[in-house]
Image 1 (cartoon, rainbow, N blue to C red):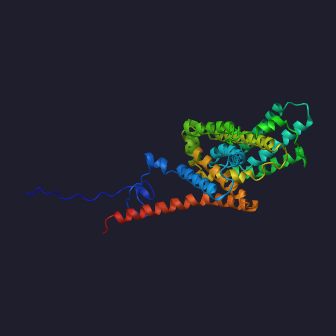
Image 2: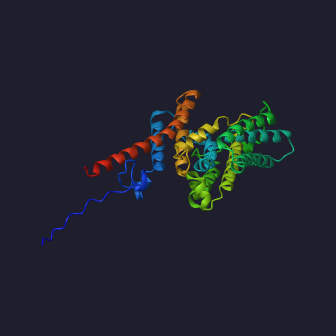
Image 3: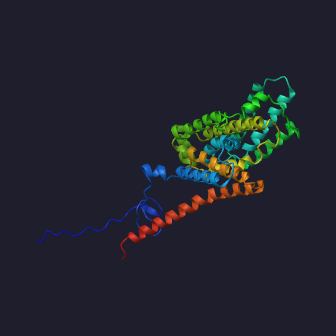
Length: 366
């Protein structure tokens, strides 16, 4: 008898996925793709790529644009991105759940109008005026949340409607007037810098807001539940996540933080107007999507969004220093918004196509 054994047939690789019982669409068993792990996941992930892109843009602007590498530039650039960065935090959570809020800039404008009218009326402490303005934003967010989470209306339709409604209410409240006689010491504080660094003092408060949303999203059961909502509301409900309650409080948070952005906008420019923060929602959504949050929900992170906000802010400020017109800046923002939506889809399609092609080449031919 020979000791030779009959060689075993090659094992067919396996994948969850594209066809029935772990086959692809042709019925062939294929290998399951492996994601990045360990250091490669950190160094080559979407967040890291955004940070690398930000560094490249900053270095390029410092080398090519006069006066960019200075504390003055740092100060004005950060002051410009603060309202976008603030609103982007709750917007990240909202989009991760598969929803959206287009009324954030109008909420900030309504807050500004209410603050201006209450202060111009006299007799009220500025602290009370600002608190009432923030409460107005919270109520506006609760109104959105009620219509979307409780009534069940689509968020896109609701927030397009409230975008116009809140802006119209701001015009009714303050008209075409502008209130500019806010306390000088308060407006000076909102533009003051930390020593000679050029970093605004209010960035400390903004970082607190960023860290708070980062902890909620990445380190709490509530935040993990938001990813589940983005993948499937039915599955999330099945595992015990209170879908309506979660969405409602997200819109309340979005309204409150949008009001904070309205307060900052008003006191930075020392001007309360009905058209304050107009068009800000485009920059916020572009930054959130560019930072890696999927418009379809279920994917995204706070570090990536922070990098996205700073990247768009740096590009816009660099172009402005280069005396590029505001029309071009809007075109750049719109282009980045489209690229942030289309780019990941194309990348994933190419990645899957290459993976299946490699697998088919590795399979034995009949």
